[in-house]
Length: 335
Image 1 (cartoon, rainbow, N blue to C red):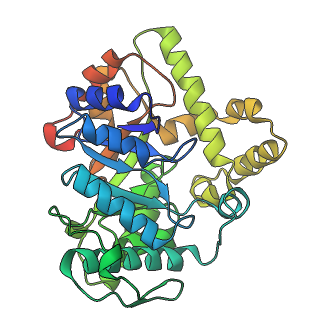
Image 2 (cartoon, rainbow, N blue to C red; image 1 turned 90 degrees about the vertical axis):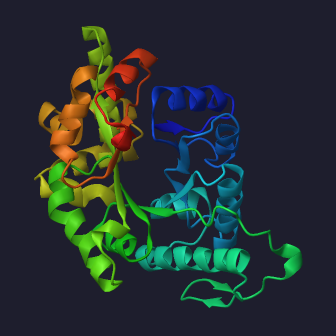
């Protein structure tokens, strides 16, 4: 289950997600910090896994990320997943006033640095990490937390481009694909890049989990379906307006759509953008089905390449459709 981080809503939302049978509850970093609500989620649940999807890596030092991951892994009793992403240059530099450069190489360095810090805390290894972007060589007992009895949390990496996907294959426990990743893009671009990274690190496909948020259009009435379609069109338009995701649209022959959407975004014409997402684009990047049929449709489209999915609905239907949708997934693949 993927949701915006919200402190007030988190206890009830986490309890409901666990009761419905979701395997993992993930918070986004959009309007709020994604880590704080997970403390409440851990307090009010017992079984469901908890994670970030995503937390921005380049706006925090590896030490910050290491502390957050270590503390949440301990407090959740081994249920935390540290999901990291790069964001795009404009947001890192202009919204956060942080450094952007060499995103794939910097991300590899972040993850390796975080893991070196965890080894110092959990295994007593001397901290002497020296990477191309980050250096960590001081960790005295006064500043070292006790080892986590549950070990370090898994690290997942959000990836859109092929270089970042290859990095996930090299150093991450899981790769978080983007909602704009169509089944065709996953098959033709993402999987080969992931396999390249795995080979470079001497790893196998079993060493990494492939996760994908799937935009879904569902509901019980015509009004609910129209509301869902409009919301998904707007979400797709927002994503597709970003130049970083142009390669996905290029693969489908929709580069011109990216130009139109980007131009409207630069004019702050957000309300007009959804109308440019026609049915072909909607069908390529989302699954439309009644609640009872969502599991079958998603499994047919993603089952051979994706290990886990999240039902991504940028609208607010009642709990009932999701309860019925989840009945179609087995316990092992509910997300």
